Length: 127
Image (cartoon, rainbow, N blue to C red; front, side, top):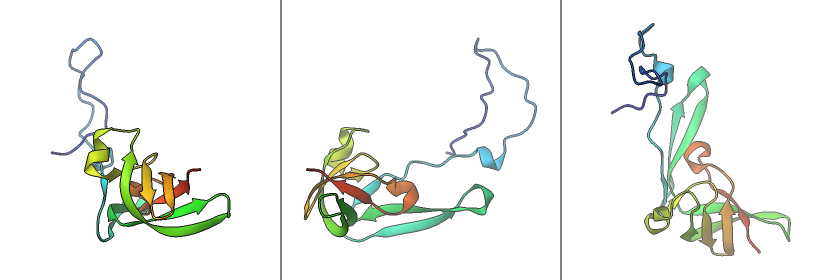
């Protein structure tokens, strides 16, 4: 089933609106990506509006972690998901999105990128 992001066919009162035109392709949405922790990295490039592209990250095993004390970025293996402010059930399912606290080889880090749209996991090391 497709996700429609256009105007609803209903009024605020619940009555029907007169249809002025058909649905358009640019009004379609997508299912959320739900990037998971995995043994290998899987990506897919999709076309978006205006001919631009988005890189969808399906599974990931590493993250680019920024260490503020050393002012360096290190590629670290992700061990597990510790906390997720978007949904507490994502912790059990090891789903990574922006704001997720992940445990890496070099310590805990918070994800600053949007893996489902950027195609990469960037994180900042917590003290």
